[in-house]
Image (cartoon, rainbow, N blue to C red):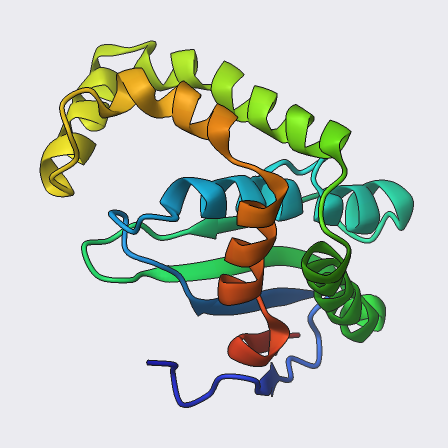
Length: 189
């Protein structure tokens, strides 16, 4: 089920705002969804890194419109949300929103070159030890297993599961979850 505002552009004017807050969002997926890991890889490629993701490379590095842009899922037992979040100068807000949608379409239409997919997988796998570097993070990882009824060996199998993701799975997840017609665009400022 899609939210009733899917596909809409919502704007909230704020006359004296120096920046515009932009959100492009839609329905995500349940944490236990079979394509959670391919979707996580697609998300990482699109906006999981402020500098190296497609949105970061475009909006921050190439155009200099933002200090940071990020995408992410809100995990839940039921499907949570997925969002692109950034702030840009008001004068480029419309164009920045168009660039976000272009990058989503490019991911869906053009796919992912092997080298880019490899970099994303490596970044995700290499970040795994940080998820266990403190006692509170270890507890959080075990709480994730309990909260979502994941198998006890989930974290042991996680890196291998990421390695198994192929381009077709990434594109399929992006097409299902990030397609512009299923998203709402919000601009404040």
